[in-house]
Structure formats: structure tokens, C-alpha cells
Image (cartoon, rainbow, N blue to C red; front, side):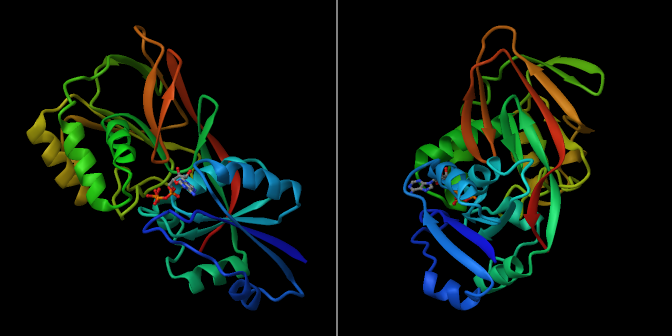
Length: 294
Ligand SMILES: Nc1ncnc2c1ncn2[C@@H]1O[C@H](COP(=O)(O)OP(=O)(O)OP(=O)(O)O)[C@@H](O)[C@H]1O
């Protein structure tokens, strides 16, 4: 008998999400499966519900939502035999796209029933896990503005990007240590990714793999408004790396230090976070998460 617990974010994506237990019980026969559905009632509630499901001996815990919900559920399952399932009902669904998990509910449930499990890498930033990506600079500012808008659509991402453009001159000076080299710079963006998808089928690191034991890193030097526009356009065409201001790396770790103040504004799996420290160290934990994927 397998216990499958569904942690459902009702406000993810377009909102009003529901999973009917009667429907699920028809899908997963009662002889072989015990099904539990737990809706989240507030931000970060999925962490508490996942911790409870672990104590209740769940075999599979399914994050039903977007990258934020996956982040909360998966953070509790790193280095555990408990398997993560995903029903992608978020807005961007970056990680689910990389794992080729269908958006169609019936197909996603069939995948969970078949239970083909992959082991994927997990990113670690100081003591915070990430599964898709993290970044400092422009992307963190976009996420900050996006969260303030309280809307979860592609157009609110675009509006947040336009608002963040007004602040591009306020770049912070950092020291970045990567692959044995140290750079002193004021980058427009440092983007560190485990996954090859950011959501909405857009990618800054199209060659990244969830199973290669490496982080894919993109550093963009200070650029002006025209180059930002060009960078965005080229990003949609997946050839932004042709710009001379863009450098890409693969590495197992990266350290970013700020001498002047102990505070970093970052985005981690699409959520804004303040880190009260002079430095952030980012590394990769190889094959640390079991996840159902195609
Ligand atoms: N009942 C709730 N009310 C308010 N916020 C919630 C609730 N349940 C979960 N949340 C929060 O909703 C946020 C967004 O969730 P999630 O990232 O899954 O969806 P999304 O933003 O639509 O998708 P994506 O990240 O793929 O673009 C998360 O920060 C989560 O903690």
C-alpha cells in the first residue's frame, strides 16, 4: 500500500485550484493507494504540511502548484527516500517543464501512478536549497517588483521588468570567486541555475541539466537600457550569450562577497529573499532529490 499526499496551492497560476478526493480515489484504487489532499492556506504553509506528511509516513508527496510550491515541498525532501511528485498548476512551471511533466491533469496523474523516479541535483545557497535557479541583481529586482504586484501572470512579469529598468544604475559591487578566479565587478546580473527552464518556456541557461552535478552560471556585466532590451530579445531566441557582456560558466560552486554591507537581495526559485551576510556560497548537491518525471 502506497501513501500519496497531495499538497495543493489553491492560488497558484490562475487560482481557484481544487483536487477532488473522490476523483483521485477513482484514479488511484483504494486497494493499492491511500490518498490524502492538503490545501495550503498561507505562504510557506506547504513546508508545515510536508513535514506533517513525512511524520505520517507518506511515500510520495506531490507539490500541486508552481516553482514556489515545489520549492517549499522539495526543501523538506532533500536527501530523503520520499519521492517528490509534481502537478504543474503554477504560472511559469519552470522545473516541471525541464522534467517534461505534462500540464494536463490526467497525464500528470498517470505519471505519478507509474512512478518513474529520477534522482536530480539540488542547489544550495548558504543554508537554502533551490531546485530551479537563484540570482542576484536584475532578476532579484524583477521578482521583488513581481511579488509586490500580487498578480501571477506573464504580463505582471513584463510590468515588473519595466519597473526594475528604472533601478539599473543602482548596481552593487561584489567579488565573485568561480573556477579558481576572482572577479571584482558591478554585475547587472549573476544567474545561477540547476534547470534549463525559468518558466513560460524561457531560459537563460538552455544547456543546464538537472543531472550533471554542475551549476550553469551566467554573468552579465553592467549594460545600458538598449543592451538590456537586446539581451531580453536574444534571450527569447536563446542566443543572448552572443553579447560580449555575457559570460557563461559551469561550476560546482561560486562565492559572491560584498565587503561594504552584510545584505544580499536575491531571488531563489522565483521568490524574493534577503540574506543577511557578507557572502553567499552556492554549491550543488548531486542527485539529492527523488522526483517523478518522464
Ligand atoms: N493560500 C495561500 N494564500 C496565499 N499564498 C499562498 C497560499 N498557498 C501558497 N501560497 C504561496 O503562493 C506562492 C506562489 O506559489 P507558486 O510559485 O506555486 O505559484 P506561481 O507563482 O503561480 O507559479 P510559478 O512559480 O511556477 O510561476 C508561494 O510563495 C506560496 O507560498
